[in-house]
Length: 186
Figure 1 (spheres, rainbow, N blue to C red):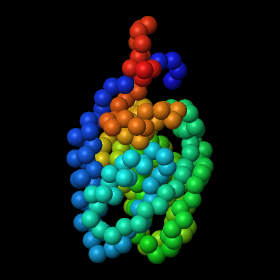
Figure 2: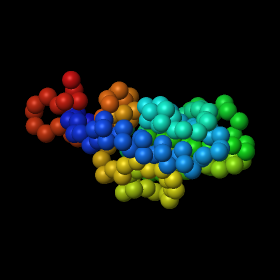
Figure 3: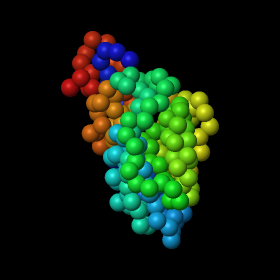
Figure 4: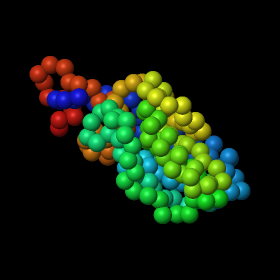
């Protein structure tokens, strides 16, 4: 994508909040009686994870892991690099990986392999959004918020070239038509 962009609303604040509550309820029921280690994938999952953990009703610890495959582009390069490592003990723990979006599945596949090598008691994935049209590998998403179309999405932690993470809703990023100023150029 190059040039100017328009933002088209995909999910409102209310829709996101309701989905976060639903996911947290499912997670709380499934992990009742267990301590949970929630590992957020940097940077995109931070906003979602912050809202999610405040709604989960079981004891939990948080940590983070950094993955990179996009750079400043809009399509995955297919090469996954760990950029930050969790500091919490993984072995024997119940792990919930919190991801903003599962696109090709390559990043989450690499992350799950990395975590499995550290012998946790269990690993499950919670993704705010899933884009199944782009999957290149099968991924089991235990807790999925929204199934999204094959469009580039921003807001609520998701970015384009490090922009738009701060937006409280989720938008599709569309190339602007015509000569007018695009909403994303403001």
